[in-house]
Image 1: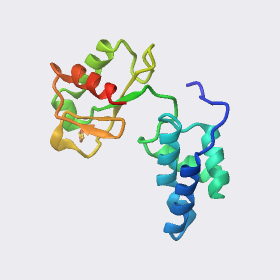
Image 2: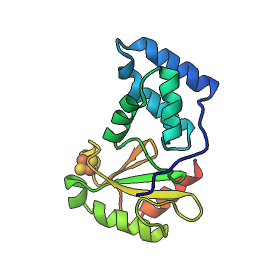
Image 3: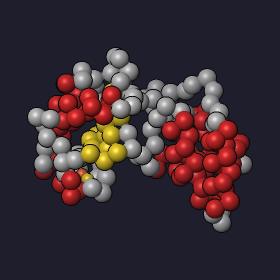
Image 4: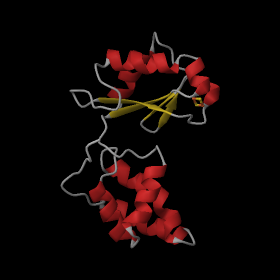
Length: 167
Ligand code: FES
């Protein structure tokens, strides 16, 4: 897979203040990586670039290797750019048994986008993910930061279009 990069990234003044505050909340700086990466992702249009890691490393005064360890472990961080609406369809057991995989395929066809790619208009990315711990609402998806389910094939596209309008 091609490694995605961007020209540069810097946190906003609010973002910097957020990171500084997080650094005071834990015994070790490394414990603050999770929320700080999340903030970076939010400010960087939904993904964490190598440039953003390097900026965060300077701000937190932590080696990039520690940040990259966390980044690669958790699926909630996107390592490539995503569309305005990132639909992460759970395809693990409970969701798969309730049609999760078919939903993912249906969404890809309806939005005319390949899994993991950004639609031509930049609006949608659809990915399959493992259990998100919300099996009680299977089949479900994480849409940006929101959990949505149980999803139905008949209504899911309209539901996603509505969520897109709110972005
Ligand atoms: S299997 Fe989909 S949320 Fe658990």
